[in-house]
Length: 112
Image 1 (tube, one colour):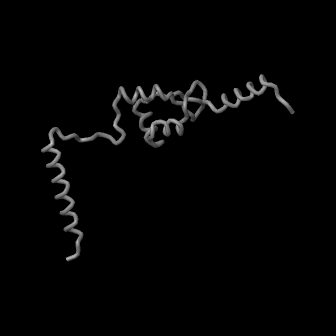
Image 2 (cartoon, rainbow, N blue to C red):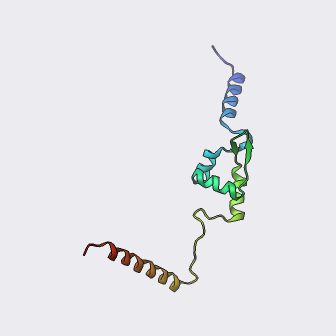
Image 3 (cartoon, rainbow, N blue to C red):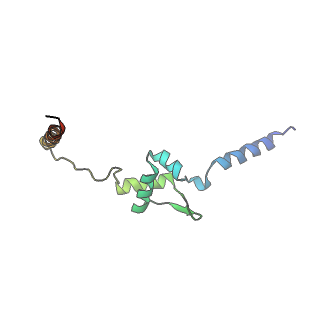
């Protein structure tokens, strides 16, 4: 069976359109890959207001540009709140406290 150029172009267009999601939107796995985060992080961000479009009963679609803009506007930190030191000496003292607490823990578990 031979196809002419027009039929081949139409078939290629149909195959390409099947690989794309509607309106350029991504499913949860695709948005996770695009943003470099886990699915649980995406669920948490949804609860905080990240935009998505419900599709059917359980499915959702995400617009990558819209999600990136929302993350930028809301400045959501992936690991929660981070305590920032106001000066270098303060950060050194925090490091010293951490080191001292580690040493105390080691002293408690070492056999006598």
